[in-house]
Length: 327
Image (cartoon, rainbow, N blue to C red; front, side, top):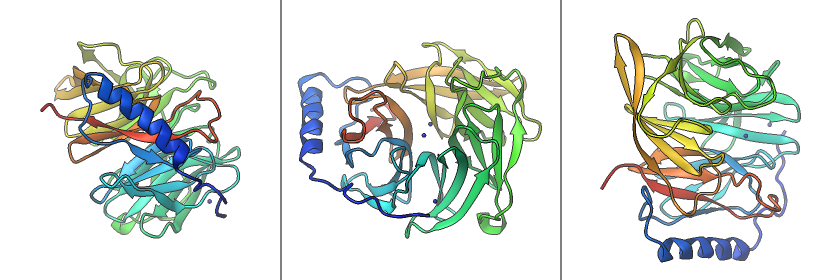
């Protein structure tokens, strides 16, 4: 779509640098004709130096964004353009993928503390860490999705899904992580470049992944790990994929590496398997290496990771709204 907890002092500095930067971006938007997908909604400022990666939302306009800088989770209101710390940062911690489970109000987060991979469940109201699962052999836990009975997590450097079982009423069980090796047509990674990245669950219970290294969309059988390619008709090649967002049969593939856009495809299922049809591309002048996105109220809200920006620990960051539906 990358928990001993003590606050990181001083993260809430004067908003002046951020507001200046955002004003410049907004000026570009006003001066130029609105590109395809631009929404009539303001950018949402995030704390300077946050180094955001993952985003999730609910209920309503409430959002949650994780930090690569110190593993903070910030929350706020998209319509009011607010933010506050939900989970304070901790030394050596990084958080990448996020997914909120509406059944429990838990925000599930994938990341690491130093070189040790973790999956956390965080209470979206209080910031309490409800569970912390260490993932043996995990190298680069990236994105995740909460299903009916488990949390599935991609590892961009290891060709497997990490599976965290859920108990009664979708609560964490405290059980050890299980693993589902990716087999079949899955393009084996080299352990260096990012491979599996975004993940969502299809209507038949299988997983859909993208691949940052070779591109494309991929279906994974959750029982066997057998992976098949999902052919996409029309449009540009599905390359540079990061986060995925799924609404019904519409799949949003965030492409931050070199593209700064979101590819929208329509998924189709037949007796021959899954395929997809390109629909359109969403873009906006304010996108700067978008990493993940979440759909709220007909708007796709994309986090700008700004990988490669000068001075990332003090740089401004923001969320860009994109009109998800034609109109």
